[in-house]
Length: 77
Image (cartoon, rainbow, N blue to C red; front, side):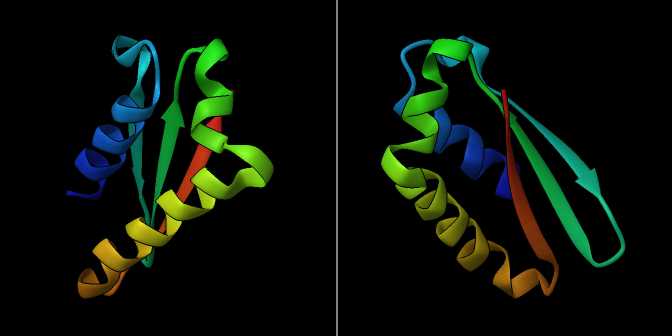
């Protein structure tokens, strides 16, 4: 579910939605989501001073609260 959420948000922000890729790495106590977008769209996902990235992480944290697992978003370039 968290993967779909991050993918939806990222595709809404970028110019080239076909380049959006979210990889899931499951751990015992946490889940890592690795977000990859086209190099020209990386700034749109991070935002000024990281505001958009922080907002995405906040929404993700709220969505994953009921699972009891910590979810981490990594934005790869």
